[in-house]
Length: 414
Image (cartoon, rainbow, N blue to C red; front, side):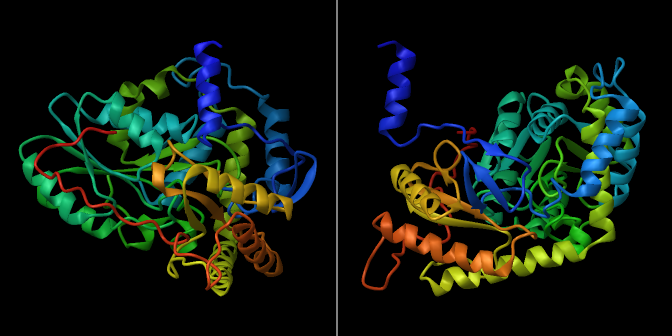
């Protein structure tokens, strides 16, 4: 057995082996998964725009008008009219002077953090930040302090220790695996006190949170107070790619210093046009955001009826903690047998003892579908062995917040 074969066998034995499932047809609330019709409860297509007729037509028209590829990086031959139009509209939507397109959210975060930091600087990163932020920190030449999740006291302590160093605080706004929102007001206040920049990733908040779906920064009344906002086009906006919303000076700086921007092919014209049309739909139809919120509230109420412990103030993402990886995947398969697809999430995406089903709601889900999904998930939990005298055990709870006892040093990204 080769070392690669041995590693794959070890992953399978530990319940960490991954395989890709095949979806046939367009993305929607219901799809064919490996040939079987299922209700999707793990999609990031939060507003149901990925297969919207207007979005499809915008992509098709862009292909007819501009072709299917951009031919090069935007600094060589790939900068096209549709890119500028989308950036202008995104900046208006986010209330910033400028916006800059990137090929993906991963490229944006791994491009912005190293560009904005230098040796001797310190990056302060929430411990539950997305992997793209973690890797952006790793690629930077700055020291990295990982503060306990959403813990302003721990963040303040770290900022005090780093006094005199250039600082960047970076956080998700809506955390992708837990569905909670960062304490943005407190973060901004600390940044002001310590002369630090703030970078907020709104990937799972845009289209889902705030007035008109403008995100958690807008919901907190902090428009214009955050130095850099990262957002994606491939979740609520149903397309692909990402953007950085910032002032004109920072945008010009990133054009010159962000390696993923400089060295990546520009987003394809159909992708950019589709995102632009989706943004126009979001602006014109804010009821979609309201429907998403109502669906989230309904789904959480239904889960509580079936014995799950969930955060009543949560958003469209609902974590159901199982503990170990094998339990998560067993529950996923049991739910699939009943026609509900809710993907199990395992390390390295989440900590070893906090494996879960990461369930997400869409605006395009019907109330009866959400009620049925909650019932199926309860049945799947029972089939997977999560039974006690009350029906559901305490394992299915909001994830705990870890407190790091070792607060006498700057921590490296794990």
